[in-house]
Image (cartoon, rainbow, N blue to C red; front, side, top):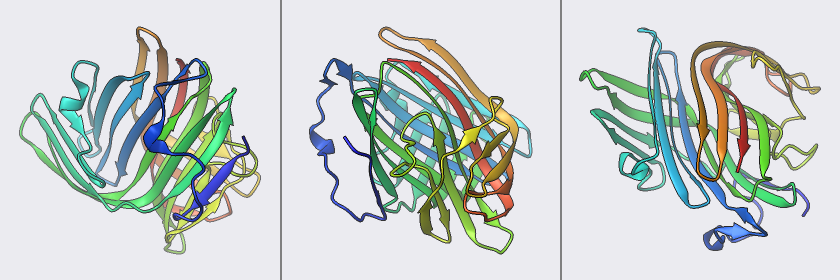
Length: 278
């Protein structure tokens, strides 16, 4: 299979996502949806994943003025707590926490890439507007109105998979709205990758990236040199029935230059180091 990439809905996808079997060539189907919103006062993420048909969900809210991270990962009835009931709708109801978000989704960037004898489809969106409200267990409400990202993925990953990932939003020093999705380890051939930078809604593919092992920097030969200052970290190490997942995903701020040369005036988002056996 050759890498395939289509931006803004252009191009006919060569697979039917509605008919993917639970297993293919001995590999379990992995699929997930992740929505993040990253702003000056609140950063958050909400997700649902299925590995071999077994679901889990998570949510996290980083209250920057108070310096408080609220989060939870669920394995028991996860879809009862976290749901995406319609396109652009996010809902969480979990032990007194309520999250209601509306996402102004776009067509995004779709890619299909081979991976260890299997393949991975993904659609990435960045710079989309996310609006709504978070109500925490103590009754305190946080309004959300910031740019964000959406990650939809499905595929038959290699048994052992490892990647670094960065997703963020902000503004360039010349006033353009910026969003990015950068990765190393999956979906990252020289051309046809998921690596993407959005500037005022226009998207281009970024060059291959190199991540610092401590997640403080990501660089690329097309002028990219982003520095990351972590503020609050989600971290889990789960040994499941048929899989193991180890990840570190800090929320934080970015400075420096995006792939392609645009310099950031402000930048918010996440970095991630994820290693899985599934």
